Image (cartoon, rainbow, N blue to C red):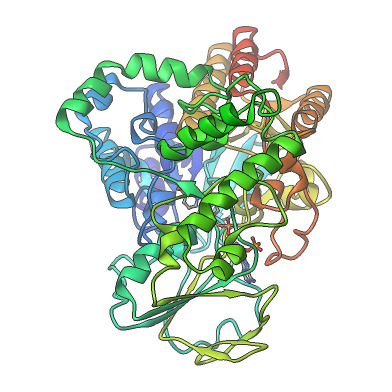
Length: 548
Ligand code: NAP
């Protein structure tokens, strides 16, 4: 149903044409928020750009797209029945299976009836007189609500490469975050791939299996480690189901809400033999253990990090046959784990294939422009049939920036955040924006994303329920609490090697104007402490917030 139809229906029923809440985004966050709002008896409308539910898993249909978290820690945990009836097929679920899971959730809880697709929110303006948000879609339709919930995702504002002639290529160009719904046939095609982030690292081995030739344009290499995915047997899934309570309770207590937990030992305190044996073990194990289950000093001490980086560099040299190519694939400007580690399935071996060619666009030949035929570098014009721009996202704040969000007095969120650090309370509410509740806002704890989403949504549901009980209609942050939280977030990022590296996590994106300065975009402290802090706020009656 469109907004106009809803409004017409409500008018004929003699009701105001408003919703209690408008949710921007129909991914994992928006779907769960809708479920919780219904439980509270609130009317809600989700506006979603896509033609269906799923968010990240709706858009990112590129070959090789799959989880980097264990599937059985990725699902929603709010319904035991849902957990028990869903069988994950692989330890790290591929995109089609994940989307199937989310469809199952949407069907089971009849979520679509409050969701409007093909509906991109263009602006949301606060009206102090009525204490409401007015939301306008790109189509020109408008709706009002008391609460605005941003469920826009941290990696949804995809960015195209700022390369001259970008739109001049005559063949198809695909960004992985806007991949076609019908699979792309690479058979017999010459394919150019720009970018070597987590997305490209998943896609390149798969494209290479089909294409006649793949040329990868690499600006900076990334450290990557094996995913070690495997199928889940029926018996194994039953065993996992029997331990769900234990698994989820464990995740809630770890620092990033994954099953992996930092090893208390320090790399520099143990013998070289013990160190090497531990790293061999981690390299052979599935998932993020090698990143977040590593020695406690690897991500904070440069000497420990250098040893770890050298270990992974050795692995790359062992896996890539041509030593010159191997050297190009080894990062020299940042240490292992200082950017979110892409988990790969045969990425390095892809460069052993005759049809895959690596172009180092920093040291060997620079990209001059994109042409109708392909990519022109300082050495030659590389000709392609298909171009893939796996050039990433304007992380965390990018999706907010794409909406004209205005608080009291017409203050623009984009302008405020542009001027410096985002200012929030717990990453849940933005300073100066009443009744705007953020799911995965900047300065919140993230780690294992669905766990972070569930925690955010539950916090907001608790807050809304509290307001309902007290008959409050307006909530906003308190300046002193925002100042304290912003300082805590900045402090938590200090001493981490990742804070000294350019990445989407530190807010740097050379394809976006004004995105060259590093910022702190997430709470990098312990997730279990964050959980306690937010739970304490709720238990204490939200005294850190101001109500009317
Ligand atoms: P990304 O890590 O930011 O990588 C973008 C790549 O494009 C980088 O190699 C970048 O080079 C390159 N690039 C950008 N603009 C360029 C230009 N103008 N010319 C040449 N190269 C250019 O983005 P991503 O790969 O999409 O991954 C982003 C995040 O998404 C990941 O960190 C991860 O959190 C998430 N992700 C998760 C999964 C999963 O397994 N669940 C899969 C994919 C992605 P520079 O490094 O030099 O900037």
